[in-house]
Image 1 (cartoon, rainbow, N blue to C red):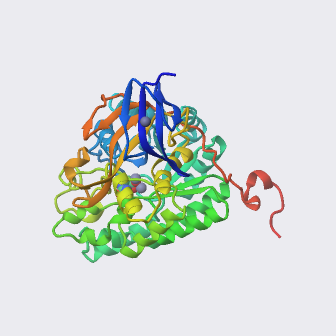
Image 2 (cartoon, protein in one colour):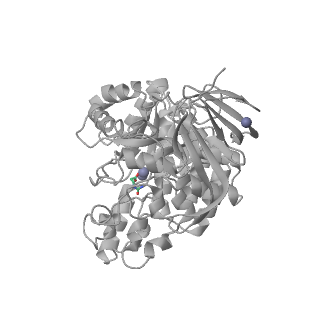
Image 3 (cartoon, rainbow, N blue to C red):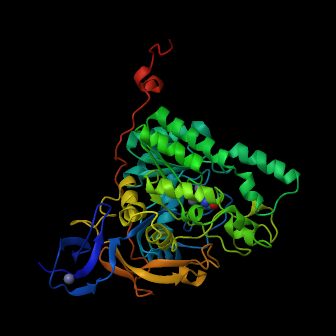
Length: 485
Ligand code: URP
Ligand code: ZN
Ligand code: ZN
Ligand code: ZN
């Protein structure tokens, strides 16, 4: 049995175990795992290194217009290159519908942005902002049939949020087809009310962004989203959970057996709202939604990462430069509601999670693999990725667990002019990243050709525990029945 590549002598890590051994790769797939595999056209020495499933970045805004129409700094080339340097072998950015646009049009647009440019395998989560009847009846099922099996909705932003009624419609289509609905959960009216009061008081500096989007706005929306999903009997994925209150609601739903999933992001673990109060307009770099919180929140979110409340830790890479093309598109001293929301982090996500998680003793190596790739592969239906097993894609990141480096903007390999993680000393870095057996990044150099990445058609959402409908609330089961005592 001949192999194209043999990775030998590394510590191979899965969520369940670690062992020292070799991986034989043929035609882009993992073909053999053994203590010792001789031969191979190419041999990669991984002794003293960790051999992990390549990261899967499940939350990134790439070549995407914001809710206010502003294009991200990263396109599918720079975005995928940055992800690769950060230890990722694939990613799932968003394909966002603008109101009035057909879903078929959205997908064609993003195919045009991704296919010629991505160095990594990719898929999309479809953002729905306009669930017209033909979107629900025809366009979403067509997208689903193409392997786009997750739909994202917003409960905030005037141009994006669907209202409860629209969310129910999406959840129902998702349940019918086996798609997973992702939700940005913040109460839009609470935020607009806070914005109006702050504006009336003349409080518009970046730090008021955090005041305007309080924890209760997230908790209320998460609670409501879970209730809506429960009514429909549909799965739900809460993106970027930033509060202990929100995480508790997720943990409680999971304990009840509901198919509720969630992620948090490095910025909520690493930074606080004090960063929004940096001198001048520096705080604009740290404006993201939901906003940064406090140190007690950081501890609580780490605990939830450790105890399984979160399926993944994703970057929410939303790159807007610290200049007039990005954060200051509406003026150099724009009030906080006019400053682009989001920060970059697709390259820093895994080094941060490794160093502050594994090296600092907050999570195990197995949990790192679960949070960085294995769970995302399962939840989002990438059935050949996120594991080191025979037959799986050879998506592998080889890590040096001992190297210590300082994070700088220049090392992110993105199109940005800052990183919110600037100056952090992190231990443990990816040194060699493969996607389908091909080396993408090695020794600090890019080895991949533009456009080599392939679209990944994903499987339906199917992991348990499966959608228990609340019987007395299920119109299909109870139509015409006397459900009132
Ligand atoms: O602030 C953020 N996260 N910007 C990106 C858009 C979104 O809310 O997902
Ligand atoms: Zn060997
Ligand atoms: Zn969001
Ligand atoms: Zn986002």
